[in-house]
Image (cartoon, rainbow, N blue to C red; front, top):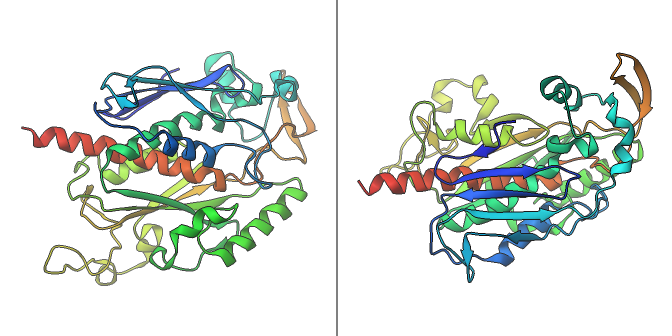
Length: 355
């Protein structure tokens, strides 16, 4: 299996399965001399971990990271940073019958066809538990991009949307509710919707909006490594993601050029920001904002048709512990992947400025 490494200078390679001994990663290209805030790393892991509220999977994991290399007396040495997060709350018996059947809308069947073997316990490598390594790396990436802030929040659950621009939202409210929505009235409706869906044995999707502020001009390249293309790759690599849009996104396709153009101020900023902080694949100094769509979780506590290994269709109800809606726990994952992109481009730009 290839494709486990992300980035060019600041790179992350992840390893591990949902029900294995541990998950982990190797971060290469991290500059030396950075005094790490381990409390910040811990906070990010706690935001992602299962069992944190009544509307997420009740799998219990401490999600404590153990660093193995690349850090001495709390300071990065410039050598590869190796780390693991041990699995403690796995219940592999819940998945025993999945050894010979394929769940609808999961990766079971394609894994079996591609590799000829698969770890069926909790989805193995295809499990969203893999993202714990991304959150560790993202928390470190945030600490090497000076003055740049990355904030994500839940902007919709099913048919319930925040009907306000992000500029009118109070980001300090994001962590005050289980849904991680900064509009408290909308958050309450979202939470009730998720609870309602859970009682039905069903699941529901939603969207996360991310805002990156204080980005310097010049990050990104004009052809294949456009900033928005790298952000899209990062977001679409997250489990359950079905779509990505930045700036005006798909709404921009309905507008006229006279409505859509961001006209300049004398200082090079723009009066509007429908470009989403990126022009020609390069950051322009304005806020970068984008939205990520997540599908409903594929495992339902309802009867559905499953395919057996010998080609039969059987009817069965899902088992195990699963999120009725992934978006609340995916907020720190979106931030982490955005941080990996920005940190990598920041270090690339910094390297070019030396010559």
